[in-house]
Image (cartoon, rainbow, N blue to C red; front, side, top):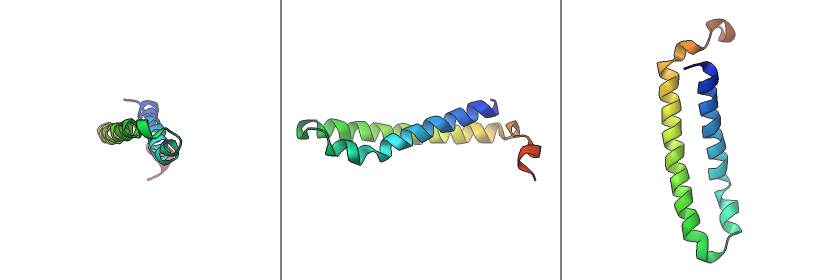
Length: 74
């Protein structure tokens, strides 16, 4: 896997994390009848966040040579 694809995977993690953080604002603006659905969606986001993070980290470890040492130093 290339460095760009690994970074793209972390980008997905970042975007999902932002949605998780905005949850409190979202639940303040939805009808009380739909709040349980939103909590369910939040739980799904958290599970997906964990999975994406673990996948991205595994890919990074598997392809840690995708970063050139001259870019980062020793």
